[in-house]
Image 1 (cartoon, rainbow, N blue to C red):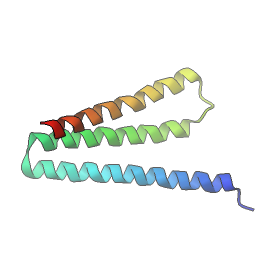
Image 2 (tube, one colour; image 1 turned 180 degrees about the vertical axis):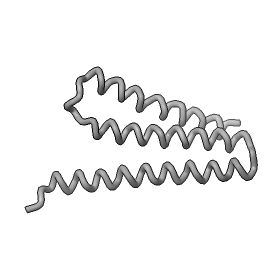
Image 3 (tube, one colour; image 1 turned 60 degrees about the vertical axis):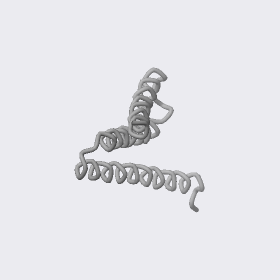
Image 4 (cartoon, rainbow, N blue to C red; image 1 turned 90 degrees about the horizontal axis):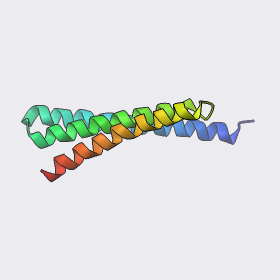
Length: 98
């Protein structure tokens, strides 16, 4: 008999891979656009998407860390997750605002 929690975890893993693949795809497309035109806005967009992709990757790793890790270790990883997102969205803001 298949456990519904196991199925849900499998679906969650697939969804995380999908989000990561999409973020990498957007990063690659923005890099190619920047390489073609060399516009500062596209450079900021590329950097923004790269940092957001990094945040997605770190977020997935943190989830794999689980609840067994000490709270200080989890807090460190949660900070490490938040910083790439903050930098990435700041870069995207700059790319749209300039």
